[in-house]
Length: 113
Length: 110
Image (cartoon, rainbow over all chains, first blue to last red; front, side):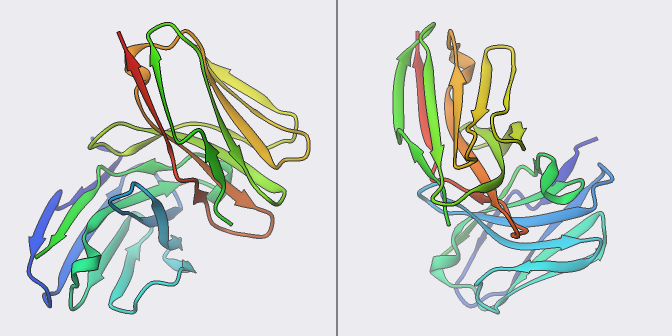
């Protein structure tokens, strides 16, 4: 009964490949997010969806494309992977946007070789 | 727009107190605090919404100053379980995103 679950937990792939990360939350939250955490632990927001609608799209290469089929799911597809994409990607969710705390998934460690 | 946390790292002995600060150059709508242990996800600690607000549970508390540009996290009588990296996240008025500080690494030794 994990609140925010991400798959896969680890992803090792070669440069140029395309990969997807999936996220699901069973908390009934209306907003979901993708954050990227680099090797220096800096957490940077990438995207945010509210009830399937994209509300935040940070300066992220258009090789990254989020998709939210419903408010409980948010996926991240990455095309033509580059070495610099290596990081931990966290999915998170919250209710009522910014007025409540975020619940994070366990993260996906992406390594591009 | 990224808030600035200080100190960047702190090492304590069990039972000692710590204060972590989070500052912004502009007034904030809210401040969140999270703790992340190595290899794990950030975990929400608390949120402060009002200037002058103070909140806390157990031996971890936080304050949000009247001008809403600074927040401090207080850890008293620290326990080994408090070790980790602490992040503040801030929301500026009119923005719809939570921006995290660079983190403060807290190490508690026996």
